Length: 632
Image (cartoon, rainbow, N blue to C red; front, side, top):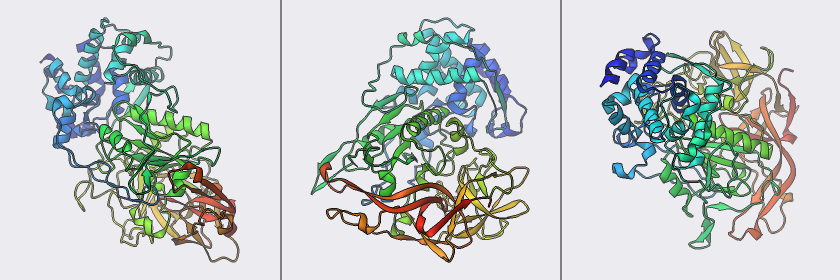
């Protein structure tokens, strides 16, 4: 029990007190490193990749990981955690409803849980600390992580060296991965952190610093002695910097002239890929893989595992997966599902998964010429309803707790000011940790969610919180603070035209209205920007807004039924401006039969502009609008 006696006084038994305490987390790393003879930098690097040193007040992650070291105890997390909530049940392909992703499951036996999801019990054995302490006390948690690293080092027959270069194999084993590719990708990320260094204030207000070691070169050959399987990456379309395996979604006929669960295509030769859509799974890894291999279910291109960032590819990029709830977007996008839950603010995502996802998106964006901005890297919650009847059923993931600001920093495209106050646009960019809008309905309808950092900013009908929330005419309901209610919400990275300013408040054009958000100079929630905007052509009082950019009727060949160009229940009024994301021809992918020989790509002469119209993107006909500089 020496570790308990040494470490508990460093942070105290109550995680909630840490925010107001002295800076005690850094000494906890130093003490644990000394106790278990692990280089402090290695311990800090592993913890950063697991949690960015956050403790999350003892709440479990998506995969049942606890504390700064993300020690996993999935069975306890399942037993104690609230049931997950679906984020809606929209039309996933464009013509059939998506059921909830995972049914409620019985609590698994310990033997049924993978070893990577039960590292906390092993840490308890190694340290003599109570499992509850490892879950709730950050210092104890760090000690448990140090003990696991030391045990892995000894199991590999390596000395408890003071040189960080000697710990590559143990770091790889700490990931819990059972294959060399995933373990190596994880260890490489840790050593990238060690080389670059990090400094950060945690969610409990603790300042932690890791000094850079730019010349550090680990002994990667240690991994050959780890006894891990070799991952078969054949057929995958992934960068070499991630671990990736092929778990195919089936293309099969079933029932009465029905088939699933995607459509064959020939992208980008037949049609361009314009979007990458970020989803969360609303379910755990094994169940997600079972679902995507069901021909009667929907599909997506990639799944990403939270514990270590491992990727499974299911559908080739050339083919069209059924994931976005808007057939136009499906036909022009790649879908990424991230293991997680929208309505569990403390079921946090690991840094390992954020980094793996960012590497995959960077690779795909470069390969297919997709701009790295928020009008091309969409959340599922940014995909518009294709018609009026589908608006209310559209999904809302990954939701307000996905850290878009950090994600785009990892993409190498941080959101920065690009203009002065007269630039005409703003980029939404709150500080994730301190931006804490109140949400309800995470567990029980109408009841407050846990206080938590957020990427989203709330909108009001006037310059103050006493004004009503902005209403979404397409939803037709009174706006609420519900975690799934997007009526009056903007998200980090989205750009809007400035419609006015009043003290600490900024107005933007949003869904055909003037919408206000708090934007104080000392702690801004947006930065100034410049770019192109659309506004109605002279003489037009309003122009229609669309959820898909379909061709004009005359563009369709005789063997392809013309699709209606149906406006949504919104209009873009004269005098208002909206940020432009892209200029696109009207396009429709005809794929209604199993036989790919009948598939057609119809391209029209009508052109559209994609615009940031509300929380979701939308489309307007080029013939209806003028494109001008935002600052003009």
